[in-house]
Amino acid sequence: MRTGRWSLAGQVFVLQLVLLALVTALWAGYAVLDARRDGDRTATREVTDIAVSVAAAPSTAAAVRSPDPSALLQPVTEQIRRATGVDFIVVMAPDRTRFTHTDTTRIGLPFSGNIDRALAGATFTETYTGSLGPSIRAVTPVSDDGRVIALVSAGVTRASIGDRFAAQLPVILGVTAAGLLVAAVGSLLLNRRLRRQTRGLAPGQLWAMYEHHDAVLHSIHEGLMVFGPTGDRAEVVNDEARRLLELPAGPVTRADLPAALRHSDRRTVRDETYVTTDRVLLVNQDVVRLGRRAEGTVTTIRDHTELRTVLGELDTVRGFAESLRAQAHESANRLHTVITMVELGRYREAVEFATAELELSQALIDRLMAEVGDPVLAALLLGKVNEAAERDIELTVTTDTALDSAAPLSSREAVTLVGNLIDNAIDAAAGGADAWAEVTVRADATALTVRVADSGPGISPESFARAAERGYSTKARHHGLGLALVRGLVTRHGGTIGTVTAPESAITVRIPRERRG
Image (cartoon, rainbow, N blue to C red):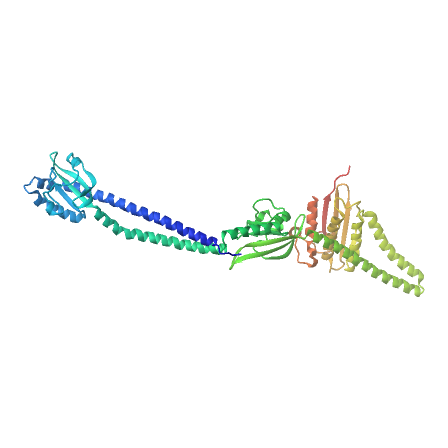
């Protein structure tokens, strides 16, 4: 899928470098300009302070009034100039005649520059090209009894300011280079992380992958949920998962899942069967790991409702077949017994034996067909009686069993409800001494009631609630799903289900019926 185009990480890296270089260059330019401006401001403050200090010194006014001002002022001004680093300090007469100068040959010559504001008593600064070249200078008056008797000018040439700036330039460039280097290293580290996360793919490839994955997620016929490292919020939920679990639109959390699935986070699940109100679901889950760290879970969900229904019907048919096989076997044994008794001349005993067995079996058939209005349910009860007998369990259909129909349940639902309850009772009673089970199915105008009791140890209400709610089993043929299937069926019809352990173990289901007018 890869092409010669740059990866997303590479494009981001180059873009970052270009932006960093541009920002760094702009910052460096601003720093240079600011350093130049700062140099000018510093030079202006320095020359102003020096000129004012020299002019304010009493010795300056005294020297100006002396017969030879230059002899007294030149050594002092040169000492101050060397100490402060300025390029010149000129003391002059009001007529511009210089008393001092860095170049002694210019002493006595007129000062070049503006002095009008200083003669008026003000201190000012200017940039002027004088005898030493372009400079920043300050001019201030020397006063005596309110009269301006002299002027003082101190200045720094542009060349000196440039030298100062040149001394700062390596620092500016060094800081700039260091900043660019740090930013480039950070960008490189970010690029490496982004490259790992995007697998070196280009933006177009990422977009195509997203489109393909999105199409696949919404088209597959299995539910899919992906939870992140925290395990609380789903990062991916496809349409089939929302349909199977009846999830709301928008973000999905663990709390939105059916109760049976809420506690399956951060563990591997293999072909576990869960029962919701309307469906039987086969669930698989894998933990996604990066090294030793769990990064989330991927859960797939398949709808096994129809399959479980078919399997339930197949179990019922198999039970019928086993019952017929057992009856055929017993009939053959009885027939052989009758034939032998006839051969022995015991005719009366043979007739009594044959009719007694027939009457007992026919009486049960007649009673169930008369009292149970649903023939499928009556056949199920007959089959379960024979199945229990094969396992040495006495299954009794109580005399108060009576119903005109299985309504509001369909025949299939009635078989699921009664068959699973009887199967659980037979399993619970099996292996015990004098094992027995008892079933009652009756209906009136208000409700359909099914009660199944057995000689087993029973199940506590807490364990019963967990088994009915969780709805998964590792038993062969998934018989452990019975309670969960019954619970889902009862819930759909607005009924109730409960269990007791004393005086005997029993489960009672009550499903309301519409009152007939």
